[in-house]
Image (cartoon, rainbow, N blue to C red):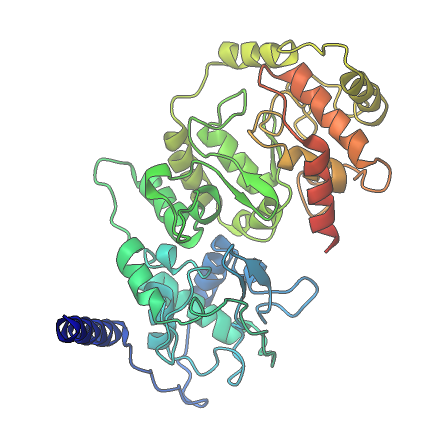
Length: 434
């Protein structure tokens, strides 16, 4: 019996070792030799400008720059749920950046998620979206980074993933399970504008990376594309008909929002969305922003008529009535004294400051976005040009901010009250302080 058990264990060990060896062979990618410093290709001004626009479309600088640091020098920490990953230095410094990358090495990183040395990249770098980009656009980004970005010698911190998640070989299996490598294929049944919008949204701009929920292994749940997700203590709302805003988004709304950071019915771009607009997508030509609007508008579905939209506004303003509880009375008083002077307008005339029953902040399943804006306000670098909102972090306590949020939820919607509001405010305030 013992002999048989030992033989079985030995057989399993051989199978296991053989299986791992086969997987290692599958995962292996060769190193691409470093490019020679004096052998940089020449790029036309048109290609470099195309690269600048594609880098803006992907808001590359936002993730690859530490606040206040040198552009593209890396070091920005991203909390993934598995540990902290730090964005790489993608300046053309040859020692700590990508200055030794040839065009082929850069293209492999973008399209396959493999660096010059042959190591699989962690999917915080959204190669699962960049794989859709054309060879020409990837080459243009390379041209822009190598010729227009200042090389910066900066070594980023080591990633904070625990063993064995820090072993990059496992990323080969992750790709096999969750990534369809390959270029964007236009839908022949859709317009040129729709296909251009789809190419940008699904590829360079990787909108689903924030707006799609993820599974237990950190991959986007493709059965819930654009269904909304939590990111950096904010909620990225659904970009579908399930978006909770009382007035349905239209193609024109999306275009205006990405161009100016505001729409008349949906408030302003704040939090993680602000740099996406103001330091990224608004750089694109109007034709591209129109195309993104066409694509996202189609995903949302048939827009409401003007009469239906006005009815939705009226319904939002009369949806709920405070029940007279102390918290709601306190919230109503605080709202009247601190907020109503700006948010008084229940019509659609003042797009930068709509009544708070219209947009999604009071209608999401979680209060995070509303709490974030009350705590931190909306600065000059966010939202609408020339319109700012003060933050009340120093002026109001957690209990007072919770009271305002509870009042707005009760008085502007028919939805159930948010639970544990004080604890939510405390959590968000504490996370922002670190």
